Length: 331
Image (cartoon, rainbow, N blue to C red; front, side):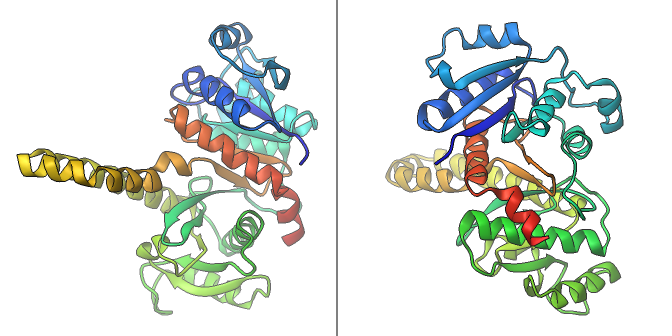
């Protein structure tokens, strides 16, 4: 296997170096093929690395004096943050010095800068954010998760093709089942946009389109790829993550309410830990920005060390599968 060259926006996200540096060190220690370039304030990065135990032969630092703030508007970041860690990392990808970029920074800025610096694949109207969602059969891929609030038929069709290519490449599914997220399975349900899109997806020979799917189907074994616009997708993602967190909190509170509950909790502890590991949103971190000429991955803005490490693993898997090339072939 060839070496995997990853640029990490070390300053991005809510926790910045507190997450990106420890996660990068852990990733280097567990994957001997991985090479990481940390992009950001070099003195701060070196200070954070001072106590780390890592293979520094596979670690590089590229200085970037600025950072994209989480409240920066995309246009503002494009105009005024061209020396930011995010922009410099994307320029490394554009120039072929790395094979992928991972950032927990501002989503809108990452999409805008990705389109301008890395550029879109030929024919792609808009890139889409795609991530795995836990389901009965390991996971379901869902897109768009926030890059495009409003979409037309052509954008949703391209999302379906790119999501199908991602599923086929990473998971080896021969003909991924593609569903269009709607408020019901019946063909008469939904907006005119969804009905028009359904007709186009049904007619596309590249797709194994199974029809409309509902919110609950995202977590079932009925579908492999769920397509929607970024407004609906981002809300669905945040609701599912919030629901998982609520169930976890409510169950713990219930078990702590009585002596019998605490005893039962001790007996159920291995089961509960296994359930939490499988459904912990941190383990599914790392949303690919599909439709660009290079591999760009978005990590949660609030990523802790475990979550950012999961995103590095997701990026490494996509690199091994040569995801941008496969999607370009599909398109």
